[in-house]
Image (tube, rainbow, N blue to C red):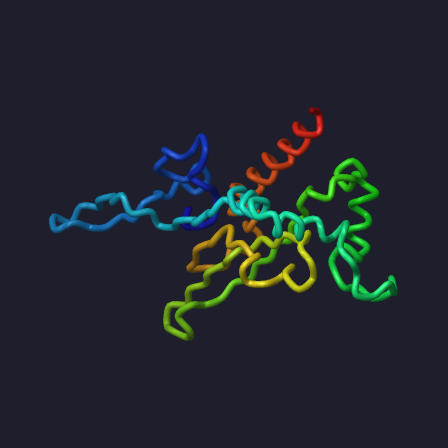
Length: 192
């Protein structure tokens, strides 16, 4: 929706108008006869690239699969616990371990970081436009790979022209749904 009211997704994927603001999902133009015509061109289009296949790919290579357990099995450069060399050394990681010790027990369980920030791709122009990429990083990897280019996944591109603001959660719904599915998969696997 143009005003970031809703996603045309799941049970609403065939809707043509926003349930909240009643605006059309598609671009409306005036034809040669002066009549308003609705096109099939969406006003906005969220780009979502699922992360599950890319996470699975990390475990296809024996070497990378071993590195995905580094947070639990890898050697630290320093034994000084006051020096944080990896996210696993941080308080948030340790708090999660205490919160869900069953999840923490298996070193193959993946910990993810999420990052987003908007930018204006067309520099300064009369019509400002912002774009918001959302990146996912698997924190299991060793420090020299943890935040490197080949291991950062582009999950979403939130379209402009305005920044998503407080409605950013609306655009994150497909990613949240996939993360919940992954979590349910982990819990189902634990029951075997």
